[in-house]
Length: 76
Image (tube, rainbow, N blue to C red; front, side, top):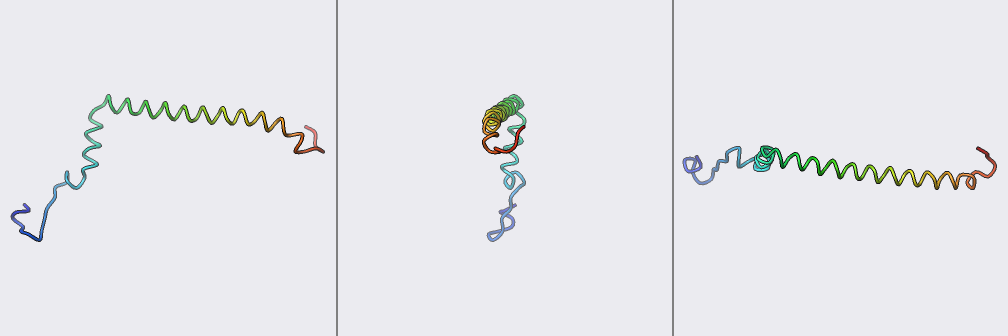
């Protein structure tokens, strides 16, 4: 097609224009690789969530301990 159009014109097919889409589709065809990737992401997300929950629980104890100092006239 490009040869027929001549010098100032050029043509591309949809695969050349969307290389990243084609490579993503090739990756999704490989199901075991996709499943392993999803599992890695899920384990990482659960690790981050559990770490944040543990930090908040530790800070809760510290805040409860410091509470009477912050409010001397108030009893709970």
